[in-house]
Image (cartoon, rainbow, N blue to C red):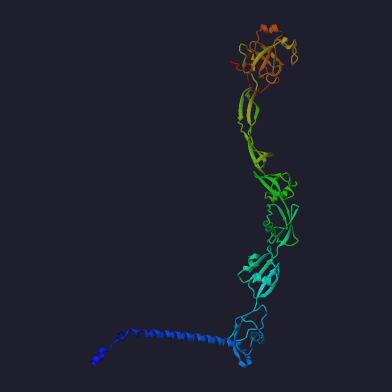
Length: 517
């Protein structure tokens, strides 16, 4: 027993190693034969099934009433219902249910499609698309989504110049066929023809702009800000509209120190200033006048006018008042009151044009501070003040003069004098407002005499006397010559006395002269 077991292989591998070599090929051949047989069986089965299907489809269907009711479902725009029916086609079922669909409605099967068990029939009603053409609106029920297809189905033609909005977005006609967003709202504005009268020159344009201004801009018609356009630029274009353009004329504007090359369409200069935003204020004026017609290339000058009141203060010199004072001796002077200058304010109205003074008008003069006169007292007490040196003759005044002499020959042979006296020694000529006529005087080196003649012609000083002689020989014998000397007024005084003498001054011919002693 033990021996038999030890002679048999203990494992499959040991048994396999113990078999002859040709016996290990048999299992492999059997497996290949089985696979071939399985392939033949499967191929034959598929062929038989396909043949059966074709056969069954070739057999005319039997009446649904003979076959019995089937289960179908209807999805009516999202509302799902299931039902049993013996109808044969989709159209018959929908007709019975009152769900006939218009030709533009969408359904999952055609009306002629036969009903089958478990069929789901989907119905979708058409969408309402709003179409507005030049303000005219219509609602179009359609299953179409592309705007181009919708317009074609509605028999609405579009042109390149037309303006089209799809769902509010501006679109071009050639872009509509490739539009991908379903159209809900389509608006079309047809291009129109406008007549343009540009300063009398007529032309036409075709436009679809929102305003006349945009239409002119699109067609390259440029405008100056002061050009006049009728109707206004913001007017919407419409058929039969004629756009009239009145071109502004070039002008040169001189204003506020500036030279402005401008254009204006105004007819009058005044209106041109308003149009060019250069209005007149207050006293301003314009050259030429505001009612002047505007011409091309004319110069318009604005004169800015301002006025102001100014005051100028000037001093008023005081006057000197002389008074005779019996308490003072003749030719004695005393200042009783010092003078003080006053002030006068003069008001003017000044007119400026472009900042330059052009006129000064006197408004008034007002004394704002009155001057105070200087009061000088002159002595009027006449009395003997002394005796002439070398004599016992009393005198009441003496005056320094420049003395010359004259005789009949120097007078052309005439002996006449101003007072009627005959020219001779003792007749003396003087200015009466210095020494009055008939004043008895004494002149050193000449002697006594009386003022009976007036001084000849204007001289550089009024303090001048001519000593008279009866002849040239007498004058030469006295050795008379021009000199400064005192003239003593002898007592008693004449009826007429010059109390206040003018200021003394020397002769121009003898500027350094004077009297001494």
